[in-house]
Image (cartoon, rainbow over all chains, first blue to last red; front, side):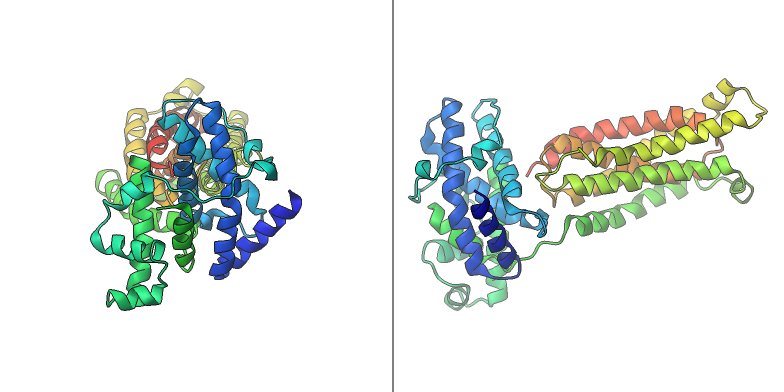
Length: 181
Length: 212
């Protein structure tokens, strides 16, 4: 656990300094842990665990948009688990259940119960359709077609700066829509 | 969208840097302050005998109390804007204005006074105080909540309440320069009620607005 936490903290520091590959690796590394905890929370609330991916994506968006509240001199895991816990409680409450979520649910995930696959979720995909066309196209190009910012800019004859703005705005309004939803 | 695709998209947005919460809070308060100042100068204004009043230590102590409240609340609200933070270890900061006020009351008790205690506490401006502080704090409360929305507080209602204390502290600082009641007993009674009102509004608004 300790090694894992140190590795996450190191990756997040590199990410903040502008290393997008480190950021990608960090998000990939935390996702299975988040998924396992979301499944456990759903199971305990008597909810179908196949909704866990919506919660995972909700947490990842919050992590992304709130990462400036992480103190670079602090360990990353407590910050991450606080966000995840908040989002999990929110999600369970929206489904009509009040449930106590222990922070240890995240911290003590055993490697053996971590499912490795990526899964599809419906909520983000549904809200994606309601975004303005430009933001939707840019998000689609980067997410689904795996195009770089540069290629996306060329494809839509936009500047790279405009692609970055559309990308960030798209993610921010996606999160706002999920919250209202 | 599957999660791998979402992660790829988030990584592509890594270059985007959000401003720190403290910066957002400062900008929002600077934008809100002129509204409160305008309300203050058009409706109330500084008391006419201000130059004499500043030589009265109990007049000056009002500002020590209200500014201590505002500064402590700013520090606590920024601390709470981090998701893993709690009031523990930080909440005591909010006792600073209470301590200053208690010391001021003690000081007043030990100096001879022309008016009896009850008269000093009830004062002449209690109803203005109860209306002015909450109204002057509303623009500042709106500003604080907008600024704090950049954070990720784990308990939005608590953070909203602290935003209420923050804006009430700033509004009371303005009002204190208008009010001719300088007794710390007056401050303890009426400023406290006005502040509690703003804090309650802040908690209710925060519970809705500060969720992330």
